[in-house]
Amino acid sequence: MTTTLFVYGTLKRGGSNHHHLAAQTFHGTARTAPGFTLFSLGAYPGLVAAPTDAYGVTGELWSIDDACLSRLDELEGLTEGLYLRAPITLAHPVASTPDAASTMISSAETYFYLLDLSGRPHLGTTWPV
Image (cartoon, rainbow, N blue to C red; front, top):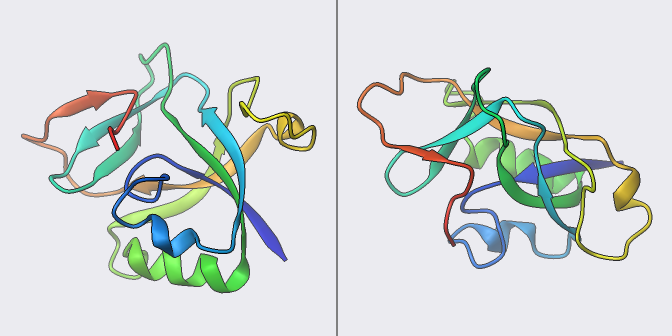
């Protein structure tokens, strides 16, 4: 089985953790629907809901297999309560590649940051890679 995953930080192409997506399928760049934003957590970002956000978060859309998803869940600290993997609504058009299947994708799984953001710098829409 495969999971469609929206990545927005170090898992993006050129990011320090991108190697974890080796052999997975890249669909293209994507943006969430409005209502989400990023904060800097030092070496990586955290995505959170932000009801007043009007733009959303930019990132990439990938199809990943179950083994990769399990490794990413461990990397993202799901069992420690650092992140929660859950669905997120995507804006249209979803991807910049001419992949007809990716333009039909309206949601994907992503990692939401769960801990306190007090004192963390607000990044807005994009984590630079």
